[in-house]
Image (tube, rainbow, N blue to C red; front, side):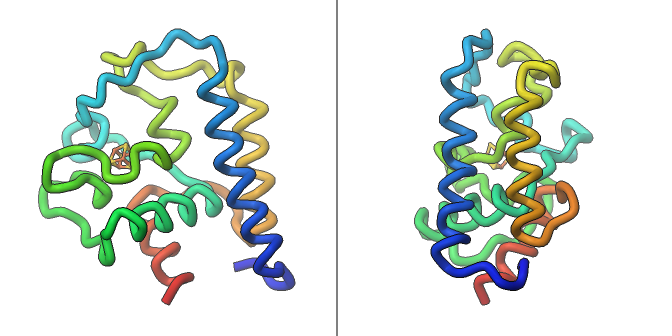
Length: 149
Ligand code: SF4
């Protein structure tokens, strides 16, 4: 974690991450997640969402709030944040990539220019938290777990 951040500053940064998600939701981009969760099965898709540090902390905190104390990697290579019912346990706090990436059923990936400013904001928050770019979701969850232990 970045040295010198107060708890209030850290909280403010995580609030900023949530604001980025809210602003994304307000964009008039024609996408419609049908909650099929195919994109949550990384081995199946061959693709893994990348998260910045702020997103990892938001997702980890949401997982805790949802009662997920541990986040072991499922043997089938799917996301550790999927619940036993096959649904995302942190849907309202899901990372940016889960909202914008490759699901064809939801309308395909967003073009970078549609969301570039929001990505830059997440990257700036990442740097404030001592990060240097996104991590694959399993590594991001491992890192966030270490920060809270
Ligand atoms: S965080 Fe949620 S939406 Fe994203 S891959 Fe994991 S289960 Fe799917």
